[in-house]
Length: 248
Image 1 (spheres, one colour):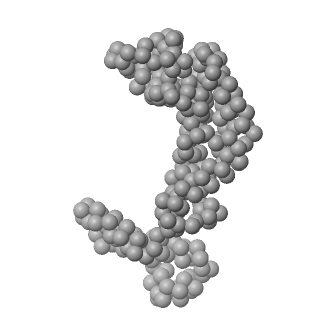
Image 2 (tube, helix red, strand yellow):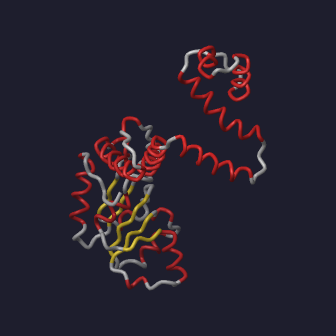
Image 3 (cartoon, rainbow, N blue to C red):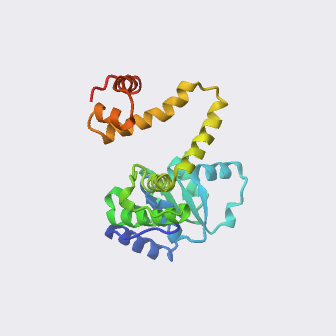
């Protein structure tokens, strides 16, 4: 994702605010959870500015290992992690700052003329739909697949970070054929063999997902045993072994 997506009413208002601030000599503070788009929004304000982690920049200033005066503008990420915030900002008075933070930092908020709060993706459905569609399209292009968004289990627990990971992983899984799966398994087994794992360990890798999916797809152990062409007593023992006393 190279730009801040603004499809929801909230995001459109935010984008309008920051676009106005881009031409003004004022500091901007952007707050929100991980993955909501704080860094992308910061780039909308200062597209040519260098981005530095707040804690790293604080150490640089303390050690005097960088000439701060060479910068006219800076994007400072995770400024809430800076220990001595007021002293830190006093060294940057001649620089236009756009800072991002995951939490409220009331002790220095007065030094930012504009403060923007970005809601989680779960509260910005239009943005979520657009971002998801973009990730799916890109994933399909990479993996030469034709997976629809509706067929994927997406994860937005960490907003855009987990959303992207879940879409790419699920698209990859959907695109894999038997040969791909065999090669992936061989690669995994090769690494695990170096750890001196036993035959039972590798058998579990195959049997647990197989039985788990059979439990999900079929209504009874009788149907499972029939479909898997497995003795019902053996099946029951394996279910108890891997999942405890499950009599479903």
